[in-house]
Amino acid sequence: MDDGGSSLSSASYGSCSSSGTEEVVLRIHVPELSIERCLTFHANDLVWTVKQAALTSLPKVGYLFMAC
Image 1 (spheres, helix red, strand yellow):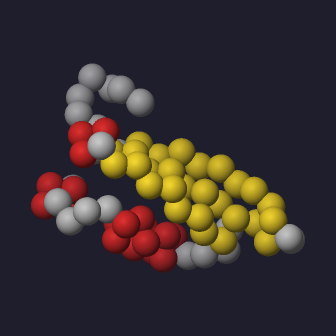
Image 2: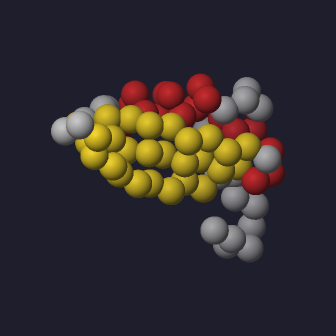
């Protein structure tokens, strides 16, 4: 996903069904840091929980957490 500027991350989403519970796979890619993470969550997990898990899976680099 190239918009001409520097993108901090991109994410893609998918879902799969395994033994009756639906799961969502979140793929996080930060090209500037050569980082890629795939995290799996239950479809009924809260957005806050998913966001916190995604943030804690990334290295602690100051400019990633700047307020917008």
